[in-house]
Length: 229
Image 1 (cartoon, rainbow, N blue to C red):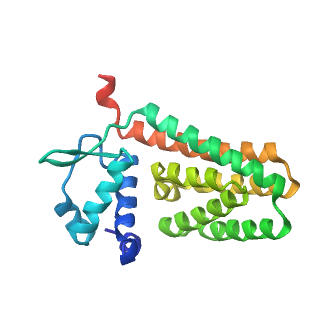
Image 2 (image 1 turned 45 degrees about the horizontal axis):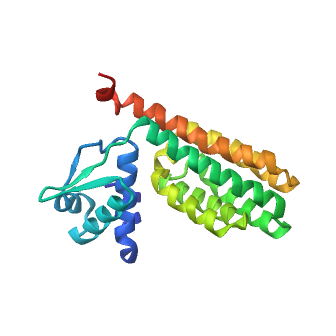
Image 3 (image 1 turned 90 degrees about the vertical axis):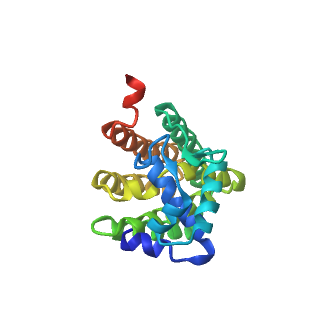
């Protein structure tokens, strides 16, 4: 476990959620492949925590259909087809695009300044920042933008859909970092000018860039090779 992962797991009140986050990222990035058995005791030793939060995390992942429980055998990573990945990103792109468009039509000067400040936090970490810190900063920026859309239920749905996207997978990659700077600038310019259409397109493109990067990675590591045979 890296230093950033240890720090991430250090918040005891949210420990099951943080363990679930790590396991989600490993599943969605192909480190833990479909059919892999997940032993709570072994995972607890690997992560440096007790088995209880690991079991709670696995139950949460079961509710998200990311793992399955087998009677008397424990948990196993659920199937993840290429179409599943495409569908998940399509939902995320549509919802976040809608929220960005709504924000462009209603954002005031104070709200825009707050988003610019969040984007500046991301920019400061783009060049050499730790992937975990960058993931947190990027998450704060998007959470603030989603709230600015003024649609609580849509923002809640985005939060649920985001469970299926591995944030630190992206933030550790140079291609994502470069694209993110450009996407944020286009998005902020559209918000400043009240251009809902451009804001929607910029947000959707930002999400789908992440989809393409993840799909290329999963294909490169042969996640679906068995399906092709």
